[in-house]
Amino acid sequence: MKSPFLLLLLAVSASAQIAAPAPPTPMGFEAPAVLSAAALLGADAAGPSHRVRERVPTDGYMAHFTIDSDYGEIECIGLGQAKARIHELGAIRKLVDVSKSDLFAEGLKRSLEQPVDAVKNIVKDPVGSVAAVPKTVGHFFKKVGRSVINAASNAKERSETGEKANTGADVTRTTKGVIGFDSAKLECAKQLGVDPYTDNARLQSEIEKVSWAFFAGGLPLRVGAAVASGGASMALTATKVVGLPEDIYALTPSELALRNQQAMESMGVPEKVSRRFASNEALSITLRRSIIRSLQALGEVKNRAAVIEVASNCEERRQVELLDQALILLARHQQAGKSAYSAMEVVGRLPCAVDAAGVLQVAAPVDYLSWTPEVAEFIHRDDLVGRKPLLLLGGGASERTRAEVGALGWTVATP
Image 1 (tube, one colour):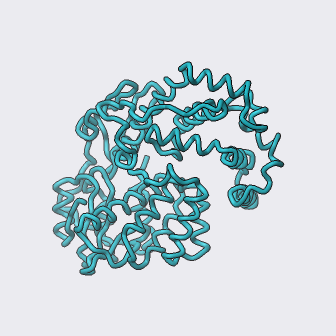
Image 2 (cartoon, rainbow, N blue to C red):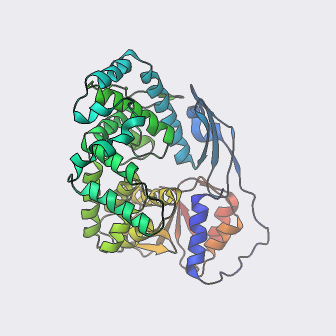
Image 3 (cartoon, rainbow, N blue to C red):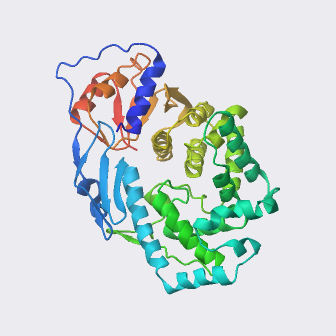
């Protein structure tokens, strides 16, 4: 499987629509490195419910982890995703324990015997039967505001473009949000310190199951905030562990969308682009918010709208994650006082920044950069030759790579 960084760089090269000159290779290229899970992850390489395989191959950019866990084998691309998944495994373990507790059983019993409102009267299963809500009481929620309209509109657009519609699921999510279930899920995710909009299906299922039993049973949700994961603790905030935006727990999806929209308007993003950004399913709510916050953190730099357009056209979540990580690298570099940016620049599809001295800074949120044909092709792009950029690395690089880019006048730096 190609890494998202490789896919993005290939897109960068393709977008130039010119043949890049063949780079000189008197010594040939390097084989991508094989790294150590223990060296990369420390104590988190093993925990009560998981073990990361020690040999971690790379593809020249990203490390490819395999995690053996009590909940199945998990493949991860990149150190950031591996840390997030390990963090989530601790949360799953905690939720499974909670679902076996007397308090959970009491919440489930109350949800069946004492529904908190008319909607709960139909609930026989705290998770599975929620799909029946729209069919049974959907008419109660025909005028609940913008979120339902958007769900219906998105389903209509998918139908018109030949995509498979999922109106029932869309309206189910909206209806549960209207009756307060989304707030319960947000609180559960906050207590666990995990992304409430994660694409980890098992974690989403466990959060939904536990949150529903406590919410429908009218009991206060208590799942605990300190879940051991190897040698680490979830008492560390998720914003520090896996880089989550701080306001995703405090605001509803609609409130986050409104803030994003207001921010994009201030950046001069065309309305058509902002609509694509808001509706592109490759962008989770968390990723949208993180991208906006990073661009805001960069200050009033020119051409931020171009980055939003790149994000709005991403086709896969992993591509969006790479773009998000690149922006975080740039924002941290500037906040550390190492640069002051004047403008954003998109090289092909890769977001970069121009500093006050006019130097182009290329953010590379990679785990380990090796001198491969793909890297050489990118470094020798016609539109980069002679510009002597700064390569801002998120991880490590081989001595060969450092020597090759240095010979072309590039500077290598870390945040």
